[in-house]
Length: 304
Image (cartoon, rainbow, N blue to C red; front, side, top):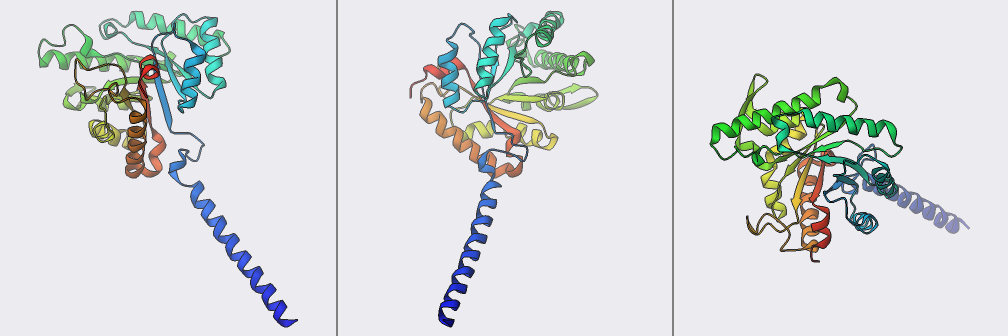
């Protein structure tokens, strides 16, 4: 009888120990940044530019859902029930929609942008399904004067920074989240702005809600290397920063820019590698970063 009692007590002890181990293991697993969620439940963001609004919504939206996309930058300025319906469909799949816009001329004259923003605000106040913010793709290097000389380039970048400042400091825009796209090579340009002299990308990160670095390269290592300075500065400033990749045919420029030649599966593998690099470097700040893919149509048509 005593032996049976001892055996029973040993079994109880073993069960208790095993239970404790399981609880500890699960607790550690739940705190693992690889789960792609921070303490607020925010997921590692993955977005896509959607320039052509004539494309088939349902097919593309299902493609995005399957590929883990949770943000769309959508270039439709009709601001009507069509937009409302699109946002509703995207939101039902757990995908936020941001209003995508951009003209290099705005650094010379902001008036047309302000008119567009007024229409955006009117839509936000009138329709049920709303944009999550404004995504701005204004690129000074598209300006016809860009290639004149380096001094002109500096001036154009400074005018761009003034444009960003006007938008982000305007009191009537306080309730609007602003994204800005920038090229990765802004760290090559030191500019004088607001009484400071530093790399152009730092000023944009300072002022923007979120910044998207067009780190267009076709390997995880080169993508990370091209945006390493921006990643570090955004982390210091506690700003959200996205690394962006290209899927359209850029062979005329360089075959190293786009994943057009390699295809979907290769790109997905490189993004997973890139995610691991960011995880290793930034740990608990992992969710302050994200990926974005340019753009919807070319990604969908990319070979497997």
